[in-house]
Every structure is written in C-alpha cells, then in structure tokens.
Amino acid sequence: MPDQSHHEEEWKPSHNPWAVALTVTLATFMEVLDTSIANVALPHIAGSLGASGEEATWVLTSYLVSSAIILPISGWISNRIGRKRFYMTCVVMFTACSMLCGLAPTLPILIFARILQGLGGGGLAPSEQAILADTFSVADRGKAFALYGTAVVIAPAIGPTLGGWITDNFNWHWIFFINLPIGLLSLYLSNRMVEDPPAVKARTLIKSPVDFTGLGLVAVGVGCLEFFLDKGQEKDWFGDPMICTVAAIACILLIAFVFWEWRHPDPIVDLKLLKNRNFGTAVFLQLILGMVLFGSTVLIPQYLQGLLGYTAERAGQVLSPAGLVMMVMMIVAGRSLGKFDPRLMVSLGYIAVAAGLYNLTRLSLDSAFGTVTLWRMLQVIGLPFVFIPISTLNYVGVPRSKSNQISSLSNFARNLGGSAGTALLTTFLARRGQTFQSQLAEHSVQGSVQYTRYIDSVAAVLRQGGMSATQAMQSAVGYAYQQMLRQASMLAYKNAFALLSFVIVCLTPLPFLMRLPSKAEKPLPEDAVAH
Image (cartoon, rainbow, N blue to C red; front, top):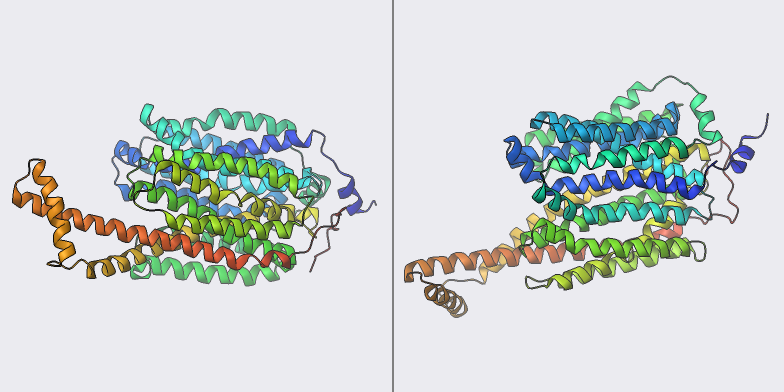
C-alpha cells in the first residue's frame, strides 16, 4: 500500500489554484458582508415588524450564537461527510436562509431564519481556509490567504455604507436578497472547482461512532458563552440572575467538554493539536487579533455616530478607504511572506497596529472627516502583516488530514476574541465614562467663575435666537451637561484605544515562539502529532 504522506505530497488540484481561491473568496465576501450590513438596518427592521430596539438586537445575537456553535465542530463535520459536501451545504443553507430572512413577516420567523443562516455562515470560513491550505503549496499560501483576507476586510468596510444606501433607497428586505445571486454563483463554481484531496477523502471513509456527548457539550457550552458575552453589558453582567445562570452553565459545560474531548479517541474538536507549538501560539494570537480587529471596527463607528453625529452611511464612508488600504497591503504582505521571516513580519505588524491605535487617542470632538479617515487608514496598515503570516504558520508541522480541525479552531479563536473584545470594550467604555463624568463634574462647580462665564455666554447666544432669559438659562445648563457627557465619553474612547495599543505591544515577542516552515515543508503522516 503506498505511503499516505507520499500521496499527500504529490496531490495537486485539477483546476487552477487561483480559480479555486476566487471561488471560495466569493462566499467569504458574501458571508462577512452580511454580518456588517444588517447592523445598519436594525432600527428599520424593528419599526417594520413592530418590535422594540432590544428585541431587534436578537437579529444579530441569534446569528452570532449559531455561527459560534458551528465553528469549533465544523472540522469534525467536514471529516465526517466530506469537506466539499459540507462547504456546499453551508453555501446552500446560507443562501436559502437569506431569502427566508428577506421574506420574514414577523420577528420570530426572522430570528429563526437568522439562526439557520448563522449555522451555514459559521461553517464557511473554516472550510474555505482549509481548502486554501490544501490547494496551495507552502510557498504560495501567503498569496492565497492575502486574497482571502482582502474579502474579509473589505466586506465589513463597505457593509455599513451599502446597508445604509439599500435601506434608505429600497427597504431592509433587500440587504438579505442581495445574497441570492452571489450564493447561486458561488454554489455553481464550488461544484466545478472545489475538490477534496486524498487525505480528506480517506478520513471521510472512516465511520467511527458519533461523540454525541462532546457534540452536546460544545454546542450548548459555546452557545451560552456567546450569549453571555453578547448580552452581559446590556443586562449589567453578574447583576442579572439570567446572565449569572448562563455564565455558570457555559463554564461547567466547557470545562467538562475539555476533559471529555482530551480523552476521547475520535473527538469532535481535536484539542491535542494545541500541543503543536506553532498552532497553540497561533490560536492565542488569533484570539487577540479578533479582539483588536473587531473591537476597533466597533469603536470607531460608535465614536463617529455617538459623539460626532455621523449617520451610519457617513461612518461607513470613513471606514471604506481603510478597506482599500488593507486590500493593497494584503497583496504586499502576501508577496513579502517568502522573502522575510514571517515571525518578524508579525511582530512588526503588531508594532504598526499598536502605533495606529495609539494615534487614535488624538481624536477629539472637533476631528474632521478627512482626519479620522486618514488615521483609520494608518491604523490598519499593519494588520495584513499579522493576519497572513499567522494564517500560514498555523499549518506548519500539522498533517494535511488535520487541516479542517486547524481551520475551525483558529477561526473559532478569532471569532471568540471578537465577541469577548467587543463585550469587554463596551463595558470598559461604560465604566470609564462614568468615572470621567464624576471627575469632570467635580470641576464644574456652580458659582465658579469659569462655569458662570460659560453658562452666560451660551445663554446670551440663545437669547439672540429668540429665547426668553429663563428658557435660555435652563437650556444653557442642559447644554453644559450634555457637553460634559460628550467629553467624558471622548476620554473613555481615548483610554480604550490606549489600552488596545498596550495589549498589542505586549504581544510583539510571542511570534518568535513559532518555528519556521522548511522550504519544502512536507505534510506529516496521519498518525504524527507535532510537539
């Protein structure tokens, strides 16, 4: 019988690898675009379906929870039914449920459709990265992941702008309907272009008993964890009995899951892969990358809309040029990967990201549109030099048959980091905002010379506008209070950007824990586990 590693080394896809890359990137763009485009339409969805704003947020939460559940187990499902079949099933589910979302007459039906859509969308990214890792040689993986990363960063950048335009000029239903032609095209191309390598096909033929215990533990545990992170700040964290209960359930089930899976002969999630030095380090770095990438993408639009009065579409226009910058830098990073030490690229990328984040602490309540746009562009320049090398080093020393597990775990880490980062930053902003509000209030003493002059000057302007003296004085006091709140919020945002910058700086030495791939990296045999 021929040696398995020999077959893995010799296998090449039947079609042009770049055609395969473009095919899977198309579905990536569709899925990532949908996650950001729906945010803008939430008020319109709530008004159209007769729901409150809090009820409408379940349109986002339900998607996040279901996609988080499918991420860690997508590698096991791919091995069970075949990666191509699983990938195409995800495309079909995401596309069909997009149509169902657009047709939903009530909020419960829309939420149900979003849950199914999340199950399909969550399985796309791990499958796509595994397909790219197997389709391209080690030398060309950087360029392939650059193309994939371009879709990942451009979609959320144009999502708010496109979503705002569609909602204003048509209605919210069309933010889901636009997925239909993209999904159908992706399905057609996937059927023709994508194929499973021999190692994946051989793995599919092994029909071991299903680990229902592990499946149940990870599904419920991750679902509870995602709900806890998404709703914690809204419900005052551990001050709410429901949040305490969900957090306890998540903690117990996930600890039990780790112990169960570590000892299981055919685990749902192969946690022993984390013993691989490269992969264990990469998972941690992906976790932090998710926190920074998602966190900063959330913070900047909130700052622009909450403090500078931008519309969602206008805020999207600030982010869009940064997407174009990242697209160019993805190409540069992909071409540079084989010429420089990828670990050094990651460290320098982290330094650039940290500098860009710290530069955002210069934002003020008077920052111009062009200034914020430029600073956002500078902030993202280093991200491709982090994303691409880490995505490539993920697979060093890991057998090709484990590519599905590698992709699902790394994507889960990044998404979990995004959820945790968003939750922690939201809480940080609220707490620091309250602290700064108290500090500013101590310096706004009624009767002081500075306070009196400020109130009198504002009241004088209002009287010139036709207000009575009493109304002008009351409005001036109210205006002063609102300005104090804006100042406190601005200082909280500055602290958040500084904190993210500090965290990133602390990560700069960690990439050197990973080992470099050899120039002719060979896949390990099935039974090998790198330590």
